[in-house]
Structure formats: C-alpha cells, structure tokens
Image 1 (tube, rainbow, N blue to C red):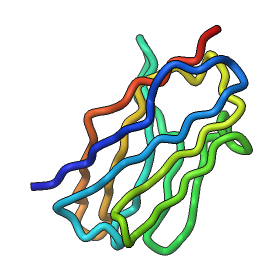
Image 2 (image 1 turned 120 degrees about the horizontal axis):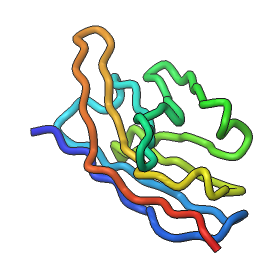
Image 3 (image 1 turned 135 degrees about the vertical axis):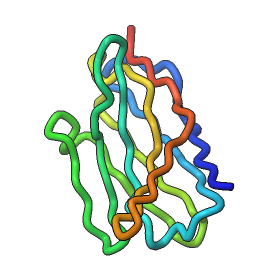
Length: 117
C-alpha cells in the first residue's frame, strides 16, 4: 500500500519560512519523480516544484528563488523549503509521486499552509 504523509504545515507571518516534509512508503522512492502541488480555495491545483529521479528540478515561476525542493532517497522523503512566504502562498500543499514509465501517480492527504499577519 502506497502512502505519502506530509508534515510541516502551519500558520506563518509574511516573510517567514516553513519546511514541508513528505515521507513515502510502498514505492521504490528513488525511481519516482517527486513533487509538491498546492490548491488555494476556489482555485485549481497547481504545480509548485518537482524533483526527478535523475536529479532535475523544476519550479513554478511564482515560487522560483523562494522555495527549494530536495529529496533524501535513503529516507524516502522529499522536502519543500519555503522562504519569504507571501499571503498568496496560502493553500493546501500536496505531495505527489509519479513514475513516468508506468504512469503510476500517487497523492498525499495534504497539509495546510497559511501565511497571514
């Protein structure tokens, strides 16, 4: 059974930082593209950042230079370091695991990030 468990969300003031973690089980973590997506109220889910099995990263324009995605294959965990947070970063953040060769695609349950003074 595949599980993606996010943690690290919460309430933070504008300009602050948060680090999200996503622990995966039930998959061969190292071969998956891992990603973070977010969904704000009334909006569609959008890509935040991805980290391929080959080491390539990709960021949404809105977070580039402020957010950093990383992964630890030994711990089956992907991280999202979020700095200089803005109110518009408020959303539920979801962890994603995707294996392009088979199309296997898994989601975590989401963690709320609220940026507000």
